[in-house]
Amino acid sequence: MKVGELLPEFVLIDQDLNDLSSTELLGFPCVIYFYPKDDTPGCTRQACSFRDQFEAFNDLGATVVGVSSDTPEQHRKFQSKYRLPYRLLSDLRGELRQKFNVESHLLGLIPGRETFVFDAKGKLVHRFNSQLKTEQHILEAIDALKNL
Image 1 (cartoon, rainbow, N blue to C red):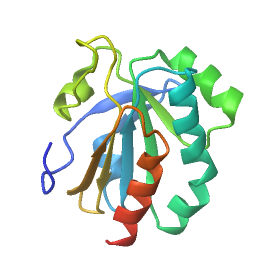
Image 2: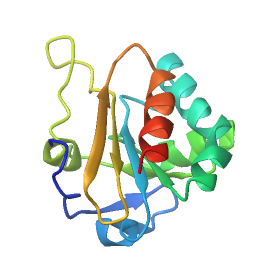
Image 3: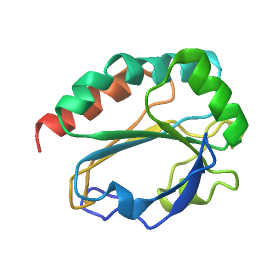
Image 4: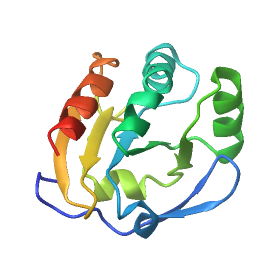
């Protein structure tokens, strides 16, 4: 995806087996972040950083959604263990990852870590990609939302 493109259509299930449609994310800004795997060191740091700044996202009127290929059950355990206040979507087949053009790393062995910020109309306004700078994803997203 390139800045200026619209949020692709999708429906995925979350940690509680509820569907989330992309159309539900329209009408207010949203942050969708892709991460490799639940309960791994980098992904836990990133998820907890989004949790710790959740009030800032709320103040900016934004919804936060995490996406990985983990199952809803794995997501539920991860969410509960770290008290994550946002939804985690199961992209079991990697279809959403493909729609967003999130590339893998290390010869395709590690799913990419990338954050997308959309405005209220579903237009991509910012994209940040870094496998190692897990906490920078949150700062980038907040800055992009403040500039809306």
